Length: 250
Image (tube, rainbow, N blue to C red; front, side):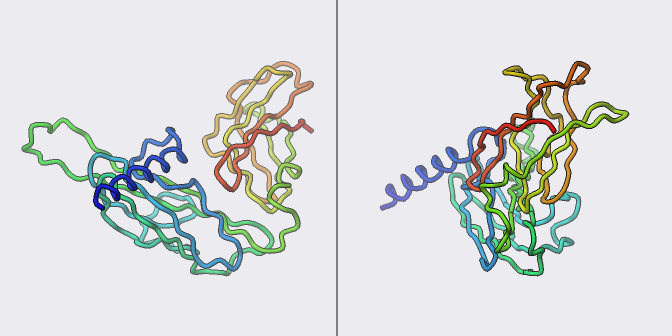
């Protein structure tokens, strides 16, 4: 029975790694990259796995992505339970995210961030390997609260995205106008001319909020003609997969 349990844990961790991919340096990984709360839903659960070779203490909380407040000082519409726990190497932990405040906008999505802060063990200063350095890691996952009766379906988001270039004193910016009630979560955004990539986006946060405009800094100065430029992007869907899309500049 013990061998069967160990085999199951190994399989689950492998599955989690497959879902997350190899881009994350954190050792505590979740079985998805985002949570979708539909109106009327009270809680959601996700599975965490410790892929480190050492135990960690994990602290969890939900905020608006500010990252500069202590968890005990944050007031959020969601709480995560358990808030603090110890996770052994190769161990799994179920985490519950609970909606505590339903007084959220009803005409658009709201976004929050689930923080998974992992603290490695301290090493004995008298031990031979005192040169080892361990760092605490904070992984953030998006939480989207989605009201009922929004005017369009999530699959129609791409039809509500409009792009244009804007000349400023600091150079040319790419402006994304999001006319939908959903957040547009981009994995990448590039300007192309034909099949050639002429510029990318230097910003690290590519999220475009509902019913708003978002300005992105280009990683190249566009000194030549802007004729026939198109925007090629990858948009992350509810499952965390990046789907390609393309749109003209207007």
